[in-house]
Length: 349
Image (cartoon, rainbow, N blue to C red; front, top):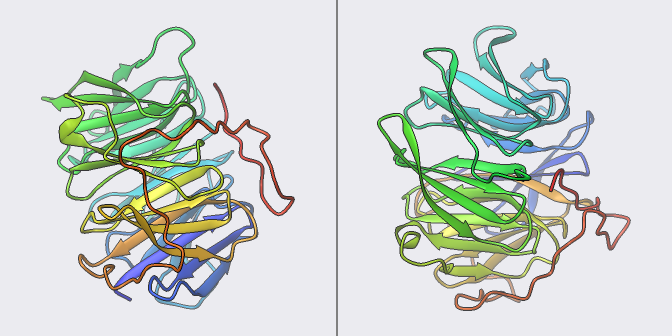
């Protein structure tokens, strides 16, 4: 298919969706526990799913429900996964405080890096030589893969050091962005292997759960416990602190998001049991995907540029607020409205 749209949830299911009709056409049961993260391999042949202590690799083009490969050496929840640009190796991060490198052609982890605390997020620099880690202690660690050593330790916020929830790189490698449990985003300019603090953004009044950068490098999306996703123009960050769009419509925490390849659409998932496909410029929900029975917490999207505009709007498209901050709707860690939903929780302060 030209568009691969997949969600994972606390109901232990991975669902493949037809982006146009909104219908689920394939379901993979994940009996080992909840699904924490999803990523496609660069060649789109495989889907990596992270769970408790392991990562399973599924064949995208097969109806076989069993994984073709498993990576099982972590002790706790796997919180981050990604592929090297050519798909030769996989990297994983876990609440056990470790980041591991796995050769796709060999057994066992080939390299291992230790953080100060549980790792919440990990990203590979586009130069393919550095791995950036965000951990529960509020630190950002940069590991040099060639030297096999930690080359940088960054502490965005002194004092109580709130947990780092998400770290991402811009596609050109010029910026690293880190978000924490207090709703702040820290922007670092990358120059000659140095990460220089450039900007602090008060993006949300509560937890930022994840971030995504558009493939064209112009926009940042922040997904939050305040039930919103915000779109920021990266070129404006140094001169202004207002979001380009505030996407409202989800009824509970927004856990994850992914841009389309042409950077015109954002797909978000929420504890309200739904996924939403947003047209960013129009500020509306083009399609809503429902079928999970518990919180939807991760998403993977792979499409050919220009293949999503054919999706027609859902009957009740929700406009986005592009000018004013919505009223704060902070969800406490034990916020729950239905027994069918998992509690919204996030570790740390």
